[in-house]
Each structure stands twice: as C-alpha cells, then as structure tokens.
Length: 323
Image (tube, rainbow, N blue to C red; front, side, top):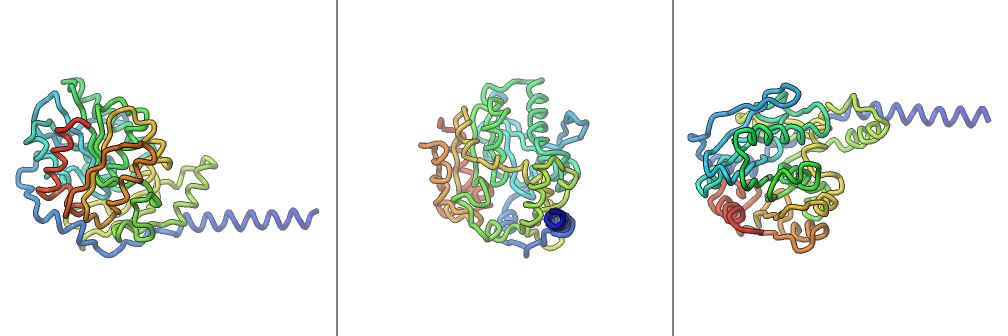
C-alpha cells in the first residue's frame, strides 16, 4: 500500500511540475509579418481620423474611443479585430457615417490607448467596459436603434455580447469575417489563422486546467503572438494574455451564443478571405441559427472587407437593410 501511495504521489508531483513548467516557459513565438493584414491599410486615408475621446470605466480606467457624427437616433458601435485599435475601422466608420449613422469605435481595453496593451484584469471585463460605454452614451441621448458591428476577433466578441447578459443592449448585430473558434468550420485549422497568429497551445491547456481549480494568478501570461510588421509602426498589440484571449472571442460554445441571441443578427465575409474560409461561414453559423443571413463579398480579402470600397459598401448595405 505504501508503495502504491508513493507511486501515486510521484505521478501527481510530476504532473504538477509539468503543468508548472509549461505555464512558466511556453511563451508564444511571433510569426513572420503577414503582409495580407498590414498592406491593405496603406490604401486608407487616415488624414481625417477624428480625435480620441475618453470614457471612465467602473474601475476608474480611462478608455479611449472615436466618434463619427451622424444621425443620433441610429448608432453603430464598431469593434475592431485582433491586435488593432479604433483607427483600423476608420474606412468602415466613415462609410457608415456618410450613410447617416452616428458611429462609435472604442479602443477595446488592452488595445490602442485603452489600458496596458495585451492584457485585461479579468475575463468579463470587456463586457463591463462596453456596458459602461453604452451607459455613458445613453446619459446624453438614447438612440432609437443601436447596431453592434464586430470584425474578425471583434466579430466573435460581438457574438459573445449577442448571446450574453448584454444581448438586449443592442437592436441588432453584424458579424464581419468573425472568428468563431480555432476548430470552427470556417477556421483554417492548423495554420494559425493563415499565419497571422502563433498560439502557445500547451500553456493555454495548462491554464485551462488550473483555472478549473480556481487558480487565476497566471492568466496575465501571453498565449498569442501576432505577425506584425517589422518595428510595429502602427503600435499594434504584439501579444494577448490568456484572459484577454478568452474574453475577446465568443464563448467556447459559440453555437450556444447564437441560439441565445434574441436580436436580429447577420454575418458577412470577403470571398478571398486569407485568414478564414468564407465558403464555410454559412454552415458554421446555420448550425446554431438556421436561416441566418450571410453575405459573401466577391473579390475581397479579410482586411479588405473593412478597407476597400467594395467591402465598406457591402457593410453599409447590410446596415441600411432590415435583416
């Protein structure tokens, strides 16, 4: 019996040591710069970028956002993609404002000028921040219609909002080339989203295990690294912590988010998306919400959906329609 207990204790100690070592040392390695993500922004005119405004979150943090003037009764809130900031949605915001929307684009906490880059304090803080921003906006004017528009990882986050406790805060949802899960039907499995991201899978698995035991002290460690341009001239976010990753995406059961969505929701992608499989998006979403509208924009890539005239025009048409 003592021998068996000793063997069991040894196995447990080895397992604990392996998990601890993985958490401590398995940092993500940055992939090579991905031109398909950075190059399309060179064609965007940022000379008329509106100034940053600021909102105070419930924890006292000063969070940044940009506002594009339009009809105060029709508000579109845009959520940028991974590693980005509000300015990366500039072309979409201008197009929607020209079509009549008042557009609000936050630097999601952990990005841009909203808090330390690449991290948040706890999983769920991004929902709290969005709730606080909407409450601040509603203190001056409550819009008749509010549309939450999320791109890429921001599209996954918009789906998380739609199926979560804040689902009723918005009139409807538009998901642009949404990240759903690493193994969703529209994912390019095993490619790190087409080479955009490097994932520290062992560290993520180890943190999942210790989180289930109630240990969250290591959730600020990086688990993703992005293929940013050399020198990072746009001050993008190079890495994500575990808690930022887990919050800036749908719930693990993204189909459950879809089923819980009570407001109108649609999605779109560019047919030439380099990061996701556009032709699989309809099936990926219909499994949770049969009949969901999915628009595919011809001859447009992932970033091009938010930067090219064809992409932004398709977004405006979707926003202007009733779905």
